[in-house]
Image (cartoon, rainbow, N blue to C red; front, top):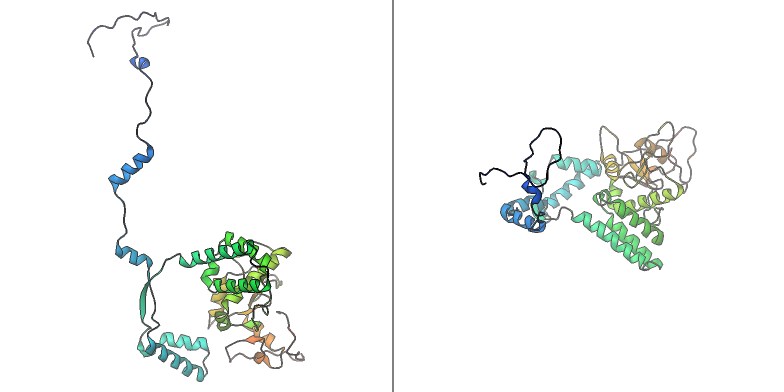
Length: 333
């Protein structure tokens, strides 16, 4: 800046009082500012180029997507396991007891061989979501009008929900699609329509018919929604009623349990008695309730209405109570 004395301005400052009358603000005479010349999108590209792109190496990808699964070609081990299962069951063990014994005393002194496979961690969830969306599209396009088409869709849904994981990962949007499908194909709430002949079943029966049982539980929930249901105690997350204990003397099966909690109750052993499923009521019952129900039938657990692998269970008969015919169906006590 030039070191010259500043000349008094031509416009007289009319301020009163003391002060500096020769203040100059050159910025007030500057032109207006210019806008940013570089676009924000371009700046993000420059930042990426400067910082670099993070890439996952082969080792990291292997940890994310590779899992160990049982090797089905380990035929020697599988044959020995089958022999031990048959041996233990012939000696009086139940299937679950024989399985536990094999876990402790492994066939051939080792575990089954495993192989490494790459699997998408979200593959099962995506397949369930996409399949439900496809079925809904078929229904919306009128491809579920005949009984044959409806039966095909019911079988497909039973296959989709054949695993516990598929039931755990279903979202509210997918469940709303299920409602739409059920309106057209009438998802059954009766076990006989789904080919489930037994009413009182254990874990072995559930494992063999999980898809149809899951579909039955969905059908019962949808039926309850039409009648008015307590969503806090009975919904898509809590889908299995629990009759094994009463709440203040009321046996309504509520609050319900999740699929995973139900399966844990079916699988547990000593010292806690396992639970069993009453497919007609869509809920869990205790071992004592199961034995009492068996006491109403002359042939006990041999009646086709029961599918219980544990041969050590005996019915509980009440003194002075006459047995009913095998066609009657006593309710849960």
